[in-house]
Image 1: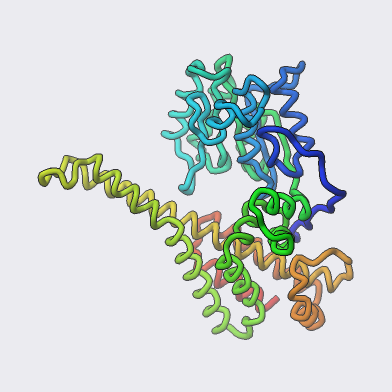
Image 2: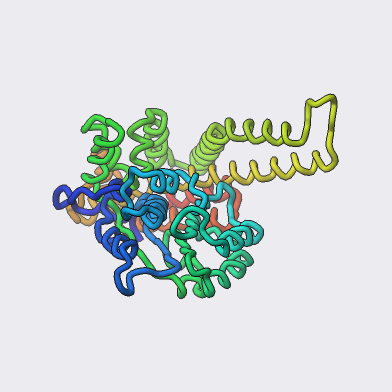
Length: 394
């Protein structure tokens, strides 16, 4: 299995209005959602499952749909309902995106309680679960009844990478909306128009991100992200023996841990300060009961968040390596597909001549196996060590 090739661009798509304007490449899905918002016959459903590859904009679609459902003009993008719905400030729109490894039953029960409430200001009670694939089994059981028997004005919008990431009993009760990978040209245009990125850099970021809008934006705006990417792409050339594999694995895991720590440090400190203030620390020496347990619970949550951030960083590295070997395979098979990394053509050509297409496929399989190992909570260092040894052996 190889990484998906970026879609071919057939020219600029018609500009979408209002809250739909940044949903690039999703014109067909937007038509479906606008019909639902307009109340066309059989167009609306009380529960939606939005699926699509990483970077396709599942969360943005969920927020835009929520805003359009509240807006009296169908998603104008300018009114208070649109702005507050997309930011999470609307009283009748609940946005759920976990920074932990999973969404537990207690959090789902709170969502179910909110789903049963009547709207206070808006037209509907809308709940957008951006990480529905992270709902635990017990959480899914708690969610099922609310989706089976929803309140009259309640709409659930569940987002997940694939249909199979959501338990069958829930997905069978949702209307499926499948998103597409945006084209490289479309992502580049968005970076230029929205973020003011220079055309050459925008094209580079869009191409190497392979249609992942968020990743493209990070690469375009952050030189350190581009440096980390190039360090990852240098790994295949370093794998000459067992020692080099173990060394490269240790460096990669350490680098991703540091990246995760840097991403969470400010938030960790802010959360600890807020909890300390809420518990009364520093107030005439007060130390409320159960304070130690509360701080311990917060620290555990923060560790779980850092673990997820590191796992996401490793996953990005695996994606870069998959693109590298996809390019190698393309050269070996003479597919003529556009390379993700044309600037590495000399190295890719050497590797393509020295190895076979079968060994390249084995290497791609090793990268996919690493993802599965991390999902099954294998220690990152062990998973990465095994993968890099597999890359060296082919």
